[in-house]
Image (cartoon, rainbow, N blue to C red; front, side, top):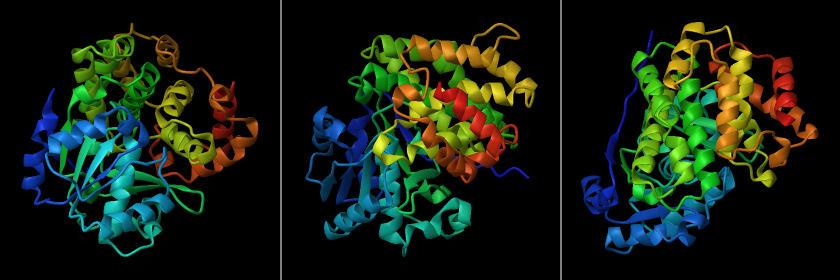
Length: 377
């Protein structure tokens, strides 16, 4: 029986950030705590938010790490509580938003964090969080409308947490905040959005509204060419608008779930010392999983080709590989620092990842080993 969960309030357009004070008032927040990362601070985007805020926040944490950790969530929760804050502003990409959700969870629930992990059935224990206002500065993760978060736990596992209570009640999507995003980050986050749309469509769960949104997001990013345009000219306001929308739609689509691309990316991303970007991992793994899944959802493959503007019978995996190449995505895992010796751990954790269950075609340990070896290059 389909269970379809949509969604939050999203203020979406150029200049939307000016609505921030009113949004905070509407959520009953008078002492917001801002969570962001060093890149956002150095790019001047944090200063833009502070100017829009028009008042001193309760506190600012600007040291979010890529692939946020349980330890950092515990540390920032203590800062949030000691500041006397009554709400959170999540400013940045997926890492800042995931950390913000973890802080909101720990600030309002009794620990440990692992108690609420989806794989152990902990989702049912997640109740209402402090108000969280999500302000994305990339166009890829879609965490501003997602019911999930990812955290690298102290036990080494990268856990998924999922609950409607993790959806930020309000998102402010201002494409202007993405103007300074470098070409490589634009490409990698854009491919994250593309992967969300494709994998959500392929998940064998019934949710026609989510599936339709996934096709539209894919058309916008690839079929209409907005991803390439955003990479070529990061100051193109129209391209930035459409890619932020594609990112938003990708997250709305993956309420259906995700598949083995994400299982493998989550498993590789837990290798904290490698500092791997989630969107880049998705982009590299995606062609290999499209080949693996071929034949499992032929009608959907036809519609994916149409959404991407491809000819009938075109090879989806080849099309994604060519897209990756055209926007500067590395071709192999070796190019981003992974080695053959990392393979067994990646496979082990991928098999235990929640997204593994949603793949279009069941995948075994041997399947993942072969896919990792091919993606390694």
